[in-house]
Length: 415
Image (tube, rainbow, N blue to C red; front, side):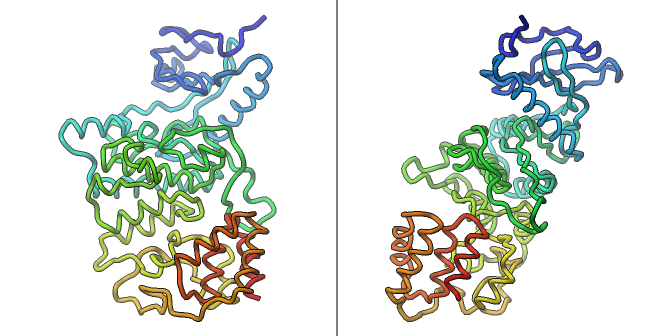
């Protein structure tokens, strides 16, 4: 009887695999298997990474699912052709083991680079982190455009190759392919969640929806990238950057950066997925504005607590229904010379909302989110006095995570 994958021992150095790859040493071991440094004898002993795929707990009964996961990872890696992602070279099954072969990145992880800087008495600077984000965000944009979510971004999974300037995103072993986002919908439709998954991701770096519910979206990667950025800035573990009682980030106490950068990072780190940036491009837009003269956060966004440059396919339709609805392309920054907005700095004084209207809003919201609707509406009313009906509807609609449902909610109430 053949051994199950988890009973097989570590492959010894010097072993020839598939009559081609010579194992040099074990690079790492985790829940999904082992990773080895190997030499490819058919490519002049070129170094490569050999990944033995063997999820913990997999026995004979789960072998078919185990093979399916392996095939999915191979398919994901095969799609990715980017200079800042290790190349996928091959996959094969041998001696009852499943293997992936990837390009070997000879360099240092950002965990190691941070440690080296700390031994010199400093962390990464604001300028270094801004450039680092600008170098990595296009990689995430590329990955997300291929309907893939990395789900395990951290300083350990980002490397700087020796002699190179651009960081490389590694370890797509837990990557999640979004189920055909293009089927049955327009290309500009926003998907918030991609469905339930097993628990994957580093605690402290992965957002709450991923750790607690197994849900992920492109904004989940942006959250993890934001956590990685504040770790590089502060030199502290994420658990030390979050208040243990309120679970709010307090990373600003441990470093000094320009307020414009802090605002970008705070939006990346928003607890609720619908309050974050939704695409890597949105983050890049706001990063490019850092350093512009007299750049400041838009007070309208401060009042509304909206995530910046939120992509919503219903913007134009909603603008027609409600003139106060914000237009697409709005970012968290606005030039000091921009024309004043009637919403800037405060919510305009409006007549009080009628009880019958509030009750109708509660009923509509409860249809979408359940019994929490009453508590949410009470909280909004307590925190915002003299709201107009339009402003009130906009605020409570943000509690509905699904864009289409939120659109229908507003449409019903505005009409």
